[in-house]
Image (tube, rainbow, N blue to C red; front, side, top):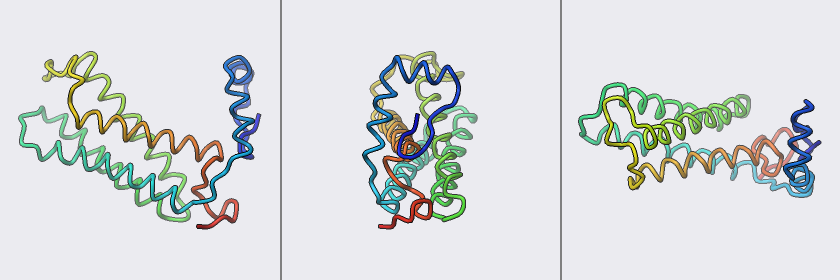
Amino acid sequence: MTAGGHEIGRGPLTTVVMRYSGLGRLATLLEYFAFDLPRTTTAAGGTLMAGLAAAHAYLIGGGTADPAYLNVYRALIVTGSLVAIALMSLPGPARAGWRLGSLVSVVALAVYLASRTAGLPGMPLLAGRWDCPLGSVTMGVAALFLALHGSVLTGVNVAYPRRRDWYD
């Protein structure tokens, strides 16, 4: 199956999932859509990563007595987000920047969801606390970045202008 000129999956499991879940039809529908705004797509991805970095930087400087490992995690998220932004803006390693951004987003989502469902060591009060606005923003920004990167991978959005010779 292809979507936007890119082959999606190669194994028999992928074929079964694509056929019976309806994702195959969606993937073939995506062949007809493509937004040729690589700078806009990259700017949107960079903005989402900057939002993720800003939320975590705010939590580092929040003045709360959080465990040390939590501030190290937050510093890694900020650093990873900033490196992803820098790589996405360069013509050569742009793909590495998008991959790093997705990795940072997945980690941020996983830690947030784990902290709210099972709690974290040294912070048992977080379990069940879904009312934190900054956490909701973090979760939303990370999910939006993953959706944007998914649209780039399927070919709906173009983020690598030299690949198709499309420019803003």
